[in-house]
Image 1 (tube, one colour):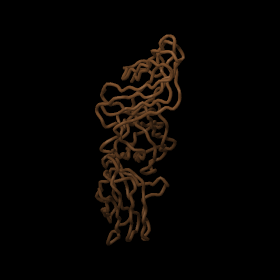
Image 2 (cartoon, rainbow, N blue to C red):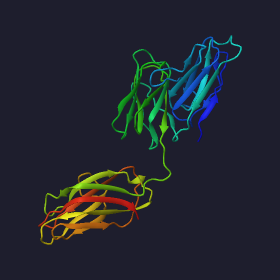
Image 3 (cartoon, rainbow, N blue to C red):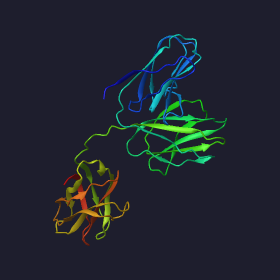
Image 4 (cartoon, rainbow, N blue to C red):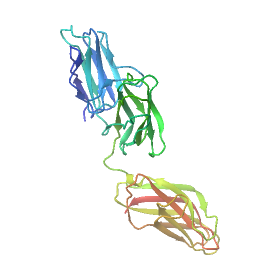
Length: 338
Protein backbone atom coordinates (compact mmCIF):
# COMPACT_ATOMS: atom_id res chain seq x y z
CA UNK A 1 0.00 0.00 0.00
CA UNK A 2 1.20 3.56 -0.67
CA UNK A 3 1.67 6.28 1.90
CA UNK A 4 -1.34 8.46 2.73
CA UNK A 5 -1.34 12.25 2.46
CA UNK A 6 -4.54 14.13 3.17
CA UNK A 7 -5.93 17.47 4.36
CA UNK A 8 -8.09 17.26 7.45
CA UNK A 9 -11.44 19.04 7.70
CA UNK A 10 -10.80 22.23 9.72
CA UNK A 11 -13.79 24.18 11.12
CA UNK A 12 -13.76 27.91 11.90
CA UNK A 13 -16.49 28.03 14.51
CA UNK A 14 -16.16 26.21 17.79
CA UNK A 15 -16.67 22.52 17.23
CA UNK A 16 -15.19 19.57 15.39
CA UNK A 17 -14.50 18.83 11.77
CA UNK A 18 -15.40 15.66 9.89
CA UNK A 19 -13.32 12.72 11.22
CA UNK A 20 -10.74 11.01 9.02
CA UNK A 21 -10.46 7.23 9.40
CA UNK A 22 -6.87 6.21 10.21
CA UNK A 23 -7.31 2.52 11.14
CA UNK A 24 -5.36 1.46 8.05
CA UNK A 25 -2.40 3.76 8.75
CA UNK A 26 0.84 3.03 10.56
CA UNK A 27 1.74 4.47 13.91
CA UNK A 28 3.93 7.48 12.85
CA UNK A 29 1.64 10.33 11.80
CA UNK A 30 3.02 13.68 10.68
CA UNK A 31 0.74 16.70 11.12
CA UNK A 32 1.53 19.93 9.28
CA UNK A 33 -0.17 23.19 10.35
CA UNK A 34 -0.19 26.26 8.14
CA UNK A 35 -2.35 29.38 8.33
CA UNK A 36 -3.97 31.79 10.79
CA UNK A 37 -5.26 30.93 14.24
CA UNK A 38 -7.00 33.08 16.86
CA UNK A 39 -7.64 30.53 19.56
CA UNK A 40 -6.72 26.86 19.49
CA UNK A 41 -6.82 24.00 17.03
CA UNK A 42 -6.60 20.55 18.56
CA UNK A 43 -6.05 17.31 16.67
CA UNK A 44 -7.87 14.52 18.49
CA UNK A 45 -8.05 10.75 18.16
CA UNK A 46 -10.65 8.12 18.97
CA UNK A 47 -10.44 4.36 19.42
CA UNK A 48 -14.01 3.43 20.31
CA UNK A 49 -15.82 4.24 17.08
CA UNK A 50 -15.86 7.99 17.58
CA UNK A 51 -17.78 8.39 20.85
CA UNK A 52 -14.83 9.50 22.94
CA UNK A 53 -12.03 11.75 21.73
CA UNK A 54 -8.86 13.15 23.24
CA UNK A 55 -5.87 15.13 22.10
CA UNK A 56 -3.03 13.21 20.46
CA UNK A 57 0.02 12.98 22.72
CA UNK A 58 3.39 11.61 21.61
CA UNK A 59 5.49 9.42 23.91
CA UNK A 60 7.65 12.50 24.52
CA UNK A 61 4.62 14.35 25.95
CA UNK A 62 4.14 16.71 22.99
CA UNK A 63 0.49 17.51 22.24
CA UNK A 64 -1.21 18.06 18.88
CA UNK A 65 -2.20 21.60 19.88
CA UNK A 66 -1.74 24.62 17.62
CA UNK A 67 -2.09 28.14 19.08
CA UNK A 68 0.27 30.24 16.95
CA UNK A 69 0.26 31.28 13.30
CA UNK A 70 3.79 30.02 12.74
CA UNK A 71 3.81 26.88 10.59
CA UNK A 72 4.31 23.68 12.53
CA UNK A 73 5.42 20.17 11.59
CA UNK A 74 4.98 17.54 14.26
CA UNK A 75 5.10 13.73 14.23
CA UNK A 76 3.09 11.63 16.65
CA UNK A 77 3.43 7.90 17.25
CA UNK A 78 -0.09 6.66 17.89
CA UNK A 79 -2.51 3.92 16.91
CA UNK A 80 -5.96 5.49 16.59
CA UNK A 81 -9.07 4.48 14.67
CA UNK A 82 -9.79 8.03 13.46
CA UNK A 83 -8.69 11.65 13.90
CA UNK A 84 -10.44 15.00 13.74
CA UNK A 85 -9.70 18.70 14.24
CA UNK A 86 -11.50 20.63 16.97
CA UNK A 87 -11.66 24.43 16.92
CA UNK A 88 -11.88 26.62 20.00
CA UNK A 89 -11.99 30.42 19.87
CA UNK A 90 -11.49 30.80 16.08
CA UNK A 91 -14.93 32.08 15.00
CA UNK A 92 -13.50 35.42 13.80
CA UNK A 93 -11.34 33.82 11.13
CA UNK A 94 -12.34 34.38 7.53
CA UNK A 95 -10.39 31.42 6.21
CA UNK A 96 -9.41 28.36 8.23
CA UNK A 97 -5.81 27.17 8.35
CA UNK A 98 -4.65 24.01 6.62
CA UNK A 99 -3.91 20.96 8.72
CA UNK A 100 -2.46 18.10 6.69
CA UNK A 101 -1.77 14.53 7.72
CA UNK A 102 0.80 12.10 6.33
CA UNK A 103 1.33 8.48 7.38
CA UNK A 104 2.64 5.17 6.03
CA UNK A 105 0.36 2.14 5.68
CA UNK A 106 -0.14 -0.16 8.63
CA UNK A 107 2.18 -3.19 8.63
CA UNK A 108 -0.68 -5.37 9.90
CA UNK A 109 -4.32 -5.15 10.88
CA UNK A 110 -4.60 -3.13 14.10
CA UNK A 111 -6.79 -4.20 17.01
CA UNK A 112 -9.24 -1.70 18.54
CA UNK A 113 -11.53 -2.11 21.51
CA UNK A 114 -12.84 -0.86 24.85
CA UNK A 115 -11.61 -2.31 28.13
CA UNK A 116 -14.15 -3.62 30.62
CA UNK A 117 -14.57 -1.01 33.36
CA UNK A 118 -15.73 -2.14 36.81
CA UNK A 119 -18.46 -0.01 38.41
CA UNK A 120 -16.38 0.40 41.56
CA UNK A 121 -12.88 -0.31 42.86
CA UNK A 122 -11.63 -3.61 41.50
CA UNK A 123 -10.55 -5.41 38.34
CA UNK A 124 -12.26 -5.40 34.96
CA UNK A 125 -12.59 -8.54 32.87
CA UNK A 126 -9.49 -9.28 30.74
CA UNK A 127 -9.57 -8.61 27.00
CA UNK A 128 -7.81 -11.13 24.77
CA UNK A 129 -5.90 -9.36 21.97
CA UNK A 130 -5.20 -12.64 20.16
CA UNK A 131 -1.95 -13.47 18.43
CA UNK A 132 -1.69 -10.57 15.98
CA UNK A 133 -1.38 -7.49 18.22
CA UNK A 134 1.97 -5.71 18.13
CA UNK A 135 3.91 -4.03 20.93
CA UNK A 136 2.81 -0.43 20.32
CA UNK A 137 -0.54 0.59 21.84
CA UNK A 138 -2.49 3.81 22.38
CA UNK A 139 -5.00 4.25 25.23
CA UNK A 140 -7.70 6.93 25.43
CA UNK A 141 -9.56 7.52 28.70
CA UNK A 142 -12.53 9.89 28.80
CA UNK A 143 -14.80 10.77 31.71
CA UNK A 144 -14.66 12.65 35.00
CA UNK A 145 -11.89 11.41 37.27
CA UNK A 146 -12.01 12.83 40.81
CA UNK A 147 -8.71 13.77 42.49
CA UNK A 148 -6.96 10.77 43.95
CA UNK A 149 -8.45 8.33 41.46
CA UNK A 150 -6.29 5.72 39.78
CA UNK A 151 -7.00 3.70 36.66
CA UNK A 152 -4.17 1.28 35.95
CA UNK A 153 -3.89 -0.54 32.62
CA UNK A 154 -2.42 -3.98 33.18
CA UNK A 155 -0.94 -6.38 30.65
CA UNK A 156 -0.36 -10.13 30.74
CA UNK A 157 1.22 -12.78 28.55
CA UNK A 158 -0.64 -15.77 29.99
CA UNK A 159 -3.90 -14.23 31.26
CA UNK A 160 -3.02 -15.14 34.84
CA UNK A 161 -0.20 -12.79 35.90
CA UNK A 162 -0.78 -9.09 35.19
CA UNK A 163 1.55 -6.11 35.60
CA UNK A 164 0.84 -2.39 35.41
CA UNK A 165 1.96 -0.76 32.18
CA UNK A 166 0.13 2.60 32.22
CA UNK A 167 -1.60 4.74 34.87
CA UNK A 168 -4.33 7.35 34.43
CA UNK A 169 -4.93 9.81 37.28
CA UNK A 170 -6.60 12.59 35.28
CA UNK A 171 -9.12 12.89 32.48
CA UNK A 172 -6.90 15.41 30.66
CA UNK A 173 -4.00 13.15 29.79
CA UNK A 174 -4.80 12.63 26.11
CA UNK A 175 -4.35 9.64 23.84
CA UNK A 176 -1.37 8.07 25.59
CA UNK A 177 1.03 5.76 23.75
CA UNK A 178 3.01 2.93 25.32
CA UNK A 179 5.08 0.07 23.90
CA UNK A 180 4.90 -3.42 25.43
CA UNK A 181 4.07 -6.93 24.27
CA UNK A 182 1.13 -8.74 25.84
CA UNK A 183 -1.83 -10.87 24.86
CA UNK A 184 -4.29 -9.79 27.58
CA UNK A 185 -5.32 -6.36 28.89
CA UNK A 186 -7.44 -5.32 31.85
CA UNK A 187 -8.19 -2.29 34.06
CA UNK A 188 -7.61 -2.00 37.78
CA UNK A 189 -9.84 0.74 39.16
CA UNK A 190 -9.20 2.56 42.42
CA UNK A 191 -11.91 5.21 42.22
CA UNK A 192 -15.58 5.86 42.86
CA UNK A 193 -18.13 7.93 40.96
CA UNK A 194 -19.24 7.53 37.35
CA UNK A 195 -17.30 5.13 35.15
CA UNK A 196 -15.08 6.58 32.42
CA UNK A 197 -14.46 4.89 29.08
CA UNK A 198 -11.01 3.45 28.39
CA UNK A 199 -10.45 2.51 24.74
CA UNK A 200 -7.32 1.10 23.15
CA UNK A 201 -5.69 0.60 19.79
CA UNK A 202 -2.93 -1.97 19.27
CA UNK A 203 -0.55 -2.01 16.34
CA UNK A 204 -0.89 -5.05 14.08
CA UNK A 205 2.05 -7.25 13.21
CA UNK A 206 3.38 -8.12 9.77
CA UNK A 207 2.19 -11.64 9.06
CA UNK A 208 4.06 -13.31 6.19
CA UNK A 209 1.99 -15.24 3.67
CA UNK A 210 4.13 -18.31 4.27
CA UNK A 211 6.16 -19.47 7.24
CA UNK A 212 9.28 -21.63 7.49
CA UNK A 213 9.10 -25.23 6.26
CA UNK A 214 11.23 -26.74 9.02
CA UNK A 215 12.54 -26.12 12.51
CA UNK A 216 15.66 -27.61 14.11
CA UNK A 217 16.86 -27.85 17.72
CA UNK A 218 20.58 -28.66 17.94
CA UNK A 219 22.27 -29.65 21.21
CA UNK A 220 26.03 -30.16 21.40
CA UNK A 221 25.94 -31.42 24.96
CA UNK A 222 25.47 -34.91 26.37
CA UNK A 223 22.39 -36.17 28.20
CA UNK A 224 21.99 -39.47 30.03
CA UNK A 225 19.46 -41.16 32.27
CA UNK A 226 20.26 -41.43 35.97
CA UNK A 227 18.73 -44.91 36.23
CA UNK A 228 19.38 -48.09 34.22
CA UNK A 229 15.81 -48.96 33.32
CA UNK A 230 13.38 -46.09 33.94
CA UNK A 231 12.33 -43.70 31.15
CA UNK A 232 13.46 -40.16 31.97
CA UNK A 233 13.23 -36.75 30.33
CA UNK A 234 16.62 -35.76 28.91
CA UNK A 235 15.64 -32.49 27.28
CA UNK A 236 12.36 -30.53 26.94
CA UNK A 237 11.37 -27.50 24.93
CA UNK A 238 8.36 -25.37 24.13
CA UNK A 239 8.37 -25.26 20.32
CA UNK A 240 6.23 -22.95 18.09
CA UNK A 241 5.37 -25.68 15.58
CA UNK A 242 2.21 -23.81 14.56
CA UNK A 243 4.46 -21.35 12.67
CA UNK A 244 5.58 -24.00 10.19
CA UNK A 245 3.96 -24.01 6.77
CA UNK A 246 3.38 -27.76 6.19
CA UNK A 247 0.10 -29.10 7.53
CA UNK A 248 1.70 -32.53 8.06
CA UNK A 249 5.05 -32.87 9.84
CA UNK A 250 7.69 -35.43 10.73
CA UNK A 251 10.36 -35.24 13.41
CA UNK A 252 13.85 -36.68 12.90
CA UNK A 253 16.39 -37.44 15.61
CA UNK A 254 20.08 -37.62 14.73
CA UNK A 255 22.84 -37.98 17.28
CA UNK A 256 25.54 -40.18 18.80
CA UNK A 257 24.49 -42.88 21.23
CA UNK A 258 27.02 -43.44 24.03
CA UNK A 259 27.73 -46.75 25.70
CA UNK A 260 30.10 -49.65 26.44
CA UNK A 261 31.76 -51.89 23.88
CA UNK A 262 29.14 -54.57 24.49
CA UNK A 263 25.80 -54.53 22.73
CA UNK A 264 22.89 -52.71 24.44
CA UNK A 265 19.22 -52.11 23.80
CA UNK A 266 18.37 -48.62 25.08
CA UNK A 267 15.58 -46.45 23.70
CA UNK A 268 15.12 -42.76 22.92
CA UNK A 269 11.70 -41.22 22.35
CA UNK A 270 10.39 -37.85 21.18
CA UNK A 271 7.13 -37.05 22.96
CA UNK A 272 4.68 -34.17 22.61
CA UNK A 273 2.41 -32.68 25.27
CA UNK A 274 1.96 -34.20 28.68
CA UNK A 275 3.42 -32.66 31.84
CA UNK A 276 6.81 -30.93 32.11
CA UNK A 277 9.58 -33.15 33.49
CA UNK A 278 7.46 -36.26 33.06
CA UNK A 279 8.07 -38.95 30.37
CA UNK A 280 4.44 -38.83 29.21
CA UNK A 281 2.48 -37.57 26.22
CA UNK A 282 2.16 -39.24 22.81
CA UNK A 283 5.39 -40.66 21.39
CA UNK A 284 6.04 -39.07 17.99
CA UNK A 285 9.22 -41.11 17.45
CA UNK A 286 10.83 -44.17 19.11
CA UNK A 287 14.49 -44.87 18.32
CA UNK A 288 16.42 -47.94 19.57
CA UNK A 289 20.15 -47.76 20.21
CA UNK A 290 21.76 -51.21 20.13
CA UNK A 291 25.40 -50.10 20.13
CA UNK A 292 28.03 -51.36 20.52
CA UNK A 293 30.32 -48.54 21.72
CA UNK A 294 29.47 -45.07 20.45
CA UNK A 295 27.01 -45.44 17.59
CA UNK A 296 25.02 -43.21 15.24
CA UNK A 297 21.37 -42.79 16.23
CA UNK A 298 19.19 -41.66 13.34
CA UNK A 299 15.49 -42.08 12.60
CA UNK A 300 12.49 -40.23 11.15
CA UNK A 301 8.94 -40.37 12.49
CA UNK A 302 5.64 -41.14 10.85
CA UNK A 303 3.64 -38.07 9.73
CA UNK A 304 1.61 -36.17 12.30
CA UNK A 305 -0.67 -33.12 12.05
CA UNK A 306 0.89 -29.72 12.67
CA UNK A 307 -0.25 -28.51 16.12
CA UNK A 308 -2.56 -25.50 16.23
CA UNK A 309 -1.43 -24.26 19.64
CA UNK A 310 1.16 -21.43 19.64
CA UNK A 311 3.48 -23.54 21.81
CA UNK A 312 3.94 -27.33 21.88
CA UNK A 313 5.80 -29.11 24.69
CA UNK A 314 8.38 -31.44 23.11
CA UNK A 315 10.36 -33.88 25.25
CA UNK A 316 13.32 -36.08 24.37
CA UNK A 317 13.40 -39.07 26.71
CA UNK A 318 15.78 -41.95 27.26
CA UNK A 319 15.28 -45.39 28.78
CA UNK A 320 18.04 -47.85 29.68
CA UNK A 321 17.85 -51.61 29.14
CA UNK A 322 18.30 -52.57 32.79
CA UNK A 323 22.08 -52.80 32.66
CA UNK A 324 23.04 -49.72 30.59
CA UNK A 325 21.84 -46.12 30.90
CA UNK A 326 20.58 -44.30 27.81
CA UNK A 327 23.09 -41.59 26.79
CA UNK A 328 23.05 -39.30 23.77
CA UNK A 329 25.29 -36.45 22.64
CA UNK A 330 25.63 -33.98 19.74
CA UNK A 331 22.05 -34.50 18.66
CA UNK A 332 19.58 -32.57 16.53
CA UNK A 333 15.78 -32.65 16.51
CA UNK A 334 14.45 -31.64 13.11
CA UNK A 335 10.76 -30.91 12.47
CA UNK A 336 10.11 -30.94 8.73
CA UNK A 337 7.49 -31.51 6.08
CA UNK A 338 6.01 -34.96 5.73
